[in-house]
Amino acid sequence: MQLYFKKYGTEGKIILILHGLFGMSDNWHNIARKLSETNTAYTLDLRNHGQSPHSPIMNYSVMADDVWDFMNDEKISEAIVIGHSMGGKTAMAFANKYPEKTEKLIVVDIAPKAYKPGHIIYFDAMKSINFKASGRKEIEDQLAKNITNQSEMLFLLKNLYRKENGEYGLKLNLEAIEANYEAIIAEVILDKPTSIPTLFIKGEKSNYIIDADFKAITQNYLNISFATVANAGHWVHAENPEGFLAVVNEFLSQN
Image 1 (tube, rainbow, N blue to C red):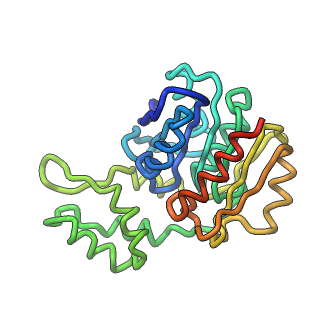
Image 2: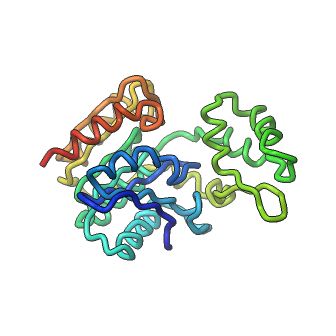
Image 3: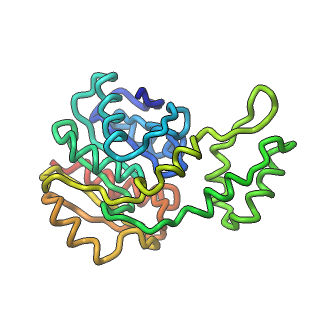
């Protein structure tokens, strides 16, 4: 599968950035732009998201293969891989399957464990949209019946686009994502421990990584660092971009 991507910069190390569930490459524009001051950064739309192709198959093995295909197409031999949430699990699966392609690994606010279903409200909200609405405000009002957090609302609305016939649609493949949701929240199975330099970043206000997860993480990642970004929840890079970039750049500067 040929993933849609954006490229920032032409110098330094190659960095690949993988977004989370319901996200897209645009969510990482500001971070990629800053990282491209000294590196070459690529933001990818994962399958069934953004402008990448749709598929009824969606699991971390095929998503890791998608990243490998992208690197092969772009003639990238090795890269630093940053992944947030679902993208973090994709990054872990990629590093496990293709360690020779992974120079460093940065996992943002996710553990390799299985998670309980926590996105049903978003599926229901997006399925309730009247795509023949007169405008975005009408759709926003519809979503507001289920989504009360304004930041979450704006995040979901980034998936909205207008078709040539005037009706609205979603960029993401909601049906396939929902059908494969169990695979998305499932544990990432690692074949063996890795010595790839790895950084796990946690948002101070997030509970996606808890104390009980650290033992399992350190058993699988032998060359590991941890960082907590203050004043940030699950969307660490958006809620405290300066703090996020500080810990990323410090890790990248290490040999």
